[in-house]
Amino acid sequence: MTYRYLPMTEQDKNAMLDSIGVQSSEELFQDIPEKVRFRGELNIKKALSEPELVREMSRLANRNVNTKDYTSFLGAGVYDHYIPSIVDHVISRSEFYTAYTPYQPEISQGELQAIFEFQTMISELTGMDIANSSMYDGGTALAEAVNLSAGQTKKKKIIVSKTVHPQSREVIHSYAKGPNLEVVEIDEKDGVTDLEAVKREIDEDTASVVIQYPNFYGQIEPLAEVQDIISQQKKTMFIVSSNPLSLGYLTPPGEFGADIVVGDAQVFGIPAQFGGPHCGYFATTKKLMRKVPGRLVGQTKDEEGRRGFVLTLQAREQHIRRDKATSNICSNQALNALASSVALSALGKQGLKEMAYQNMQKARYAYAKLQEANIPVKYHGPFFNELVVQFSDSVTSINEKLEEKGFIGGFDLETVDENMKGAMLIAVTELRTKDEIDRFVQELGDVYA
Image (cartoon, rainbow, N blue to C red):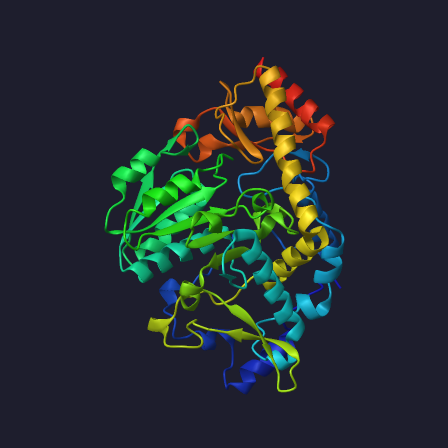
């Protein structure tokens, strides 16, 4: 047979028309005016047989550059990290990858426990009281945090540092349109938030201040100083977007007085896979637990005293009046959250700390080699695993040359900021070897020269 999937045969079509008392497809659409009906041929390619289609799709797929065949120094929110092999074994089990919302706890204990463990580990990493059962990604989690702060404080002004990921800032602006929030962006200074500008901008109408830690440029923001500024204003909330891997080594935002900590768990057990899907997390204080978007899984006991798990404090529009709901988040990334949980469990506390430490040390080795090669590094403050290199040539042309040598280069910052012409954001993860870093810097040096 030429085509493997047929929606219906002519016999099926005639049977359906007969069943509804219609003689032809033309009669079925008779209420549509003739002048708006399309009578020509669609400008699309002729249908292919299955073998032809497989060959064509394979040809197109093989044009992709991937992290198996190329050495990646690309980060900017999606990273090439170690994924323990057990992750795929667990998430490939049918009871997990086919699972949907665990509304019936009596038949969903495994799924509920997996989500509960994810919440627990995120709470420990961030230093917060509670965490929800995951969200779509870090950007939407951050925007939900902003909306929560506005609803909680009854204020309309949101201060966002420009060192927050530009895509996350775009999501914040989109979310802010509904409740009519004023979003004020603060410039960076030497790669971190300009705190003097925050002091000038913050006032009694400010609902929250949003900081990324480490920030988009890889720099580590001074959260203690930010908190000191925020504490001068009554009710203003402190929101931190954080790479959870960095918290395996850095002081968690909760210890700096953060009210809400959000981020993306892609760094734990989730492949880059062309940018998604991801798994956002949302952690906060007990005071705000009834305002948390998404789901919370709680631990309880049944009538016989056995440990059990249930969905609790369900404040979504499916469960309560829409105008009282905390969010319109209708699902979560349970499978990706499970992947993160398995990865974290496999690594353990010491493994996670070692992984974070290797990211920091290898990034510093790259920093030193770049200095030796006289390649300008733009910022020199404390950083995690990303740094910005400045070139006179366009980053696009540099990356094209790197690709020829088997490297996926850094992120072109000019694509998100016209003032960043020639600036490349480089990520160095624990997977990068000394030899790979040395060869990458050598190739950059040859291009720069």
